[in-house]
Length: 200
Image (cartoon, rainbow, N blue to C red):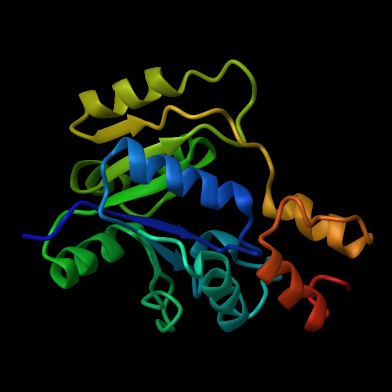
């Protein structure tokens, strides 16, 4: 029997310590056997936005999770030429792993699910672990989870402190020469510096 797994999808542009802390908290709180990081290859919600090459982002994830028990990385979406939608990825992962995965999302995504592909199907077919991040103070994540659960969803809130660092902030900091070593895994930071990423 396969263990409980969670998919953590995102552009990871770049991956940072907040992503790792959220994943560690989910691994422990939900007694997961594995958290699978899945960098987006052609994210439909980022059309028109410059994004670092998917292979570079995949490499940074590999460097970030190297040696961490319970973490792995999948190139499933990176290898797809077509846009990747969560509802389709969920069905593919169920076949590959033989179990229903959780999907780890931020609270910002929770409030934007209606903009995702076939949200009414998504809500009923997928299981979500929601991390409190990138939302205005006062947003009631538990209430929104309850509302979606009443519609047939499976949404649970991750009980960890809010982590507000974003990849956008880090890209801007790197571009402006601001030290980010305390926010980005050292191997990833070395890779960014050696390849002169985000500097222009």
